[in-house]
Amino acid sequence: MSESPDENFSNIIRQMIKKSLFTERQIEIILKRRDLTNSKFTISKGAFYRQVTQSKDKLTALCYSWILLRGLGVLSADDMDVINRLSEQISVIKSSDVFPEREDQVMSVIQEVLKRTCKL
Image 1 (cartoon, rainbow, N blue to C red):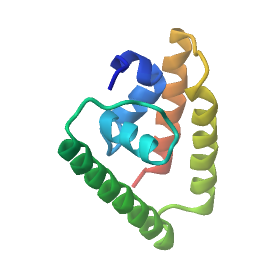
Image 2: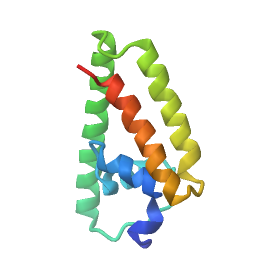
Image 3: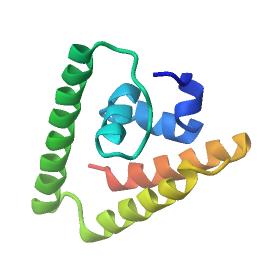
């Protein structure tokens, strides 16, 4: 990648990635393959396509898991609504400047909502 890691994602997005199933590189590849970014990669073609395969497999597994948990009633319609609203907020936050002192508050709200949603 030609950009330094600090320029690719905001701190909030970077924190979300760390807690996700994906690596930062895999998220970059998914965005690139969906034409959602113009990032350049400085890795070999073979390594790039291996990462593409890994990213696709993880994304597919995530979708199967989502469908399974919703179908079994583990995730309710209300849970899905809350998660969708959080996703919409991240869409707004991803391209805006958030003051560092607010970043912790945003992550705290997300963690609290997910803690309640994922309670077993």
